[in-house]
Length: 378
Image 1 (tube, rainbow, N blue to C red):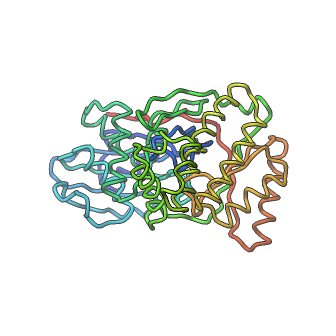
Image 2 (tube, one colour; image 1 turned 90 degrees about the vertical axis):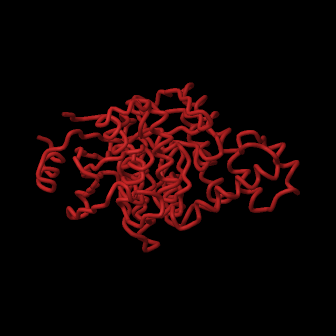
Image 3 (cartoon, rainbow, N blue to C red; image 1 turned 60 degrees about the vertical axis):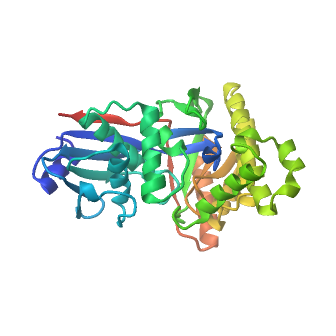
């Protein structure tokens, strides 16, 4: 019996019917463009969230978390709908609602994706629950449908207007590859991401400046892009070129112009990065990572002092490239470094943080990992 099965038995008094797991993610490049129908290039990390689920013969939903001292939240499934107040359990309840579950279930969550670090802990939770529910009730949803349903849960139930990237990579990831994802139609292509054989490593830096996407900053930026699309009569930033955007600059506000400029240029950087990876041109990959961070910092205004310090210290220590990842306002950065220089880079970042009296950052590395899967079943 696995650890989560044992915890489930202790909390609920019986064993689960199914256990599923889903990973967090790092987005190599392509930030804040999934909701603009852009291309993104994420990969799944090894850190995962587990969801153990069992059917009930009534209408009661009970949810517990191994990280919340086994507190049990109980609610009638008929009352699970947008507007129902709650905290962390809303992410799981939103999935039950979006998937149309009509009977009671017991759910235990065990999350190992760092919270607030920009590594998509919320999508890992949602996708682990969705994978378990899809199997338990034999619903037959494919991965693209599950991505849409889990995004719907976060958009409409939790109230975070996120794009589709995080849920898609958590569900669709393949070990050893990044995923070039077209956020318009969810078509995807695996891109080999073998940096270890080149003596390189992707260092993930959790600044411990924890962020929240429910405070309005994320929504404001998405709204700016949607406003530009409406004013310029296009469906999304995907249909703009930088030349067309510049020509229409007098039709939009200066803030809208900057937000749109990031989206348009970031989409091109993603496709350029794929070409660079195919050619194993990691110097070019690094240059594109740097440009992405500058754009996110200066045009999108979603960086913060801790993220900038991590990026600057990484580059000063010799990194090929570095940038913030995730929604921003805190969270994590990545640095593409020579493996032999990883420890020196870590020391440089720690020194920069200590000088500025920031929290001590956390570091880890991860190779591209497998997406969501059922790990035990009845």
